[in-house]
Length: 542
Ligand code: F6P
Image 1: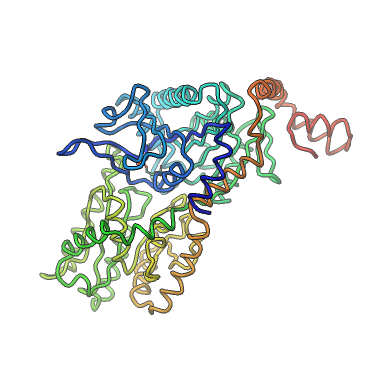
Image 2 (image 1 turned 120 degrees about the vertical axis):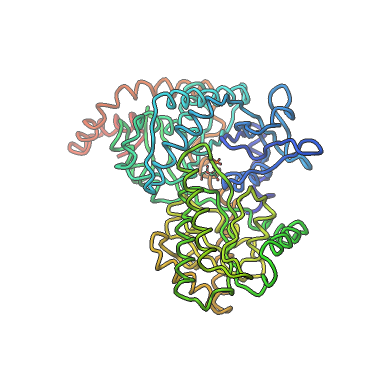
């Protein structure tokens, strides 16, 4: 599957139906620069994955406009056509006040849901005031989507944990909308989730969707289990669906990916060569004779950066002969810096880098080069291209697209990927050197294994990983999601028909508490009438 094929798949659908993507993070932001205003792409896995899809399909992307010049480039409806050189979709910006951003983005999304879903021993923090703001902002996104679609039928593709309530608001206002949501982070087990003070509301919000996607089956199972133990709903484990209000939400795994072909082309561009030259200057004379280990992450406590540094430190302590023969180039994008835990992980990393460089460095060799900045796409590709080893050491990660981007960028077929077994990517990229980032000894061993790996083995492993990412590329991800939606819902269903079904749904919702009894009797008596009643109430034939 490629961009053209996905575009063609949508060409027919789009004659009758609008396509809207909604996320918190925008695919492009505008900043003032010396000679005017420039558009930049943020460091975000979500954007890396979704931007090629919206370019192929067209439509409107609704997102929070948060950069300094964002307001200066939009029209009266807050819209701007993008990408600037060759516009293929519309970005519609939603504005938030600093107080709203604080409660909704920093508060509930990143101080509560993010640590709650990742379970990396950082305590989630909850505040009722933040929750009220989160609700209001989700409502604001809902109003914007409704304004954007007008009276037309539409497929709305919602992204991530910032917008958990949006599907329910949309469903209540427009039962005929086709709603899909993709949850880009892990879904935890129910014991972890149950401490969230507004858990039912979040689950009810998500069950407004027709289709809800996670990266891996394990997260789908956790979600089904969480719903079953938390609220009134019929969980159908055979079909991986949940009925609430008589209407199903299908829960499916869709491992996200990258634009394999385009990354391979861009990796050989002049822009990347230029960035490589910059890194070589940074690494100093003799850089090319050394093995280069690369890390490229947002500064986030889930990414295991201190663990990686400790592994590197141990490797050098145990193997002094490696000193001067290897270098760690760490690209680190500042992220969510208003949150205390993010500031302290950043300090911890800087201290560790200083310590390692002091302990092992010599007059003509610096073990770790820590480059704290928002490195653009071409710079990141340049680092992947120079790497002998790329290290992804996340303590927990829904997918991790650094791993897949690296593989896609290595058209030369060489390079080693060191990958945490706690990433979604580890399920597909089994030819990486898989590690447990909590185990420093194991990490140091794996770094040594990568150092010594013979070229033939490197190439064989890389070839298999490249075949996997090429096959399950981002367009394939898009195709699977939309074909699953088409299989499950009737795209042409008109608004009045959907309204009738929705009214029937509210009656069923009121009967929900009695469903267990109906199910019990149906199974016991195997009565045809009861079976029919059960099927009417739940949509499930027994
Ligand atoms: O992994 C979840 C996610 O929202 C990604 O989709 C994205 O890459 C990352 O977090 C960036 O987060 P933010 O938008 O907060 O900078």
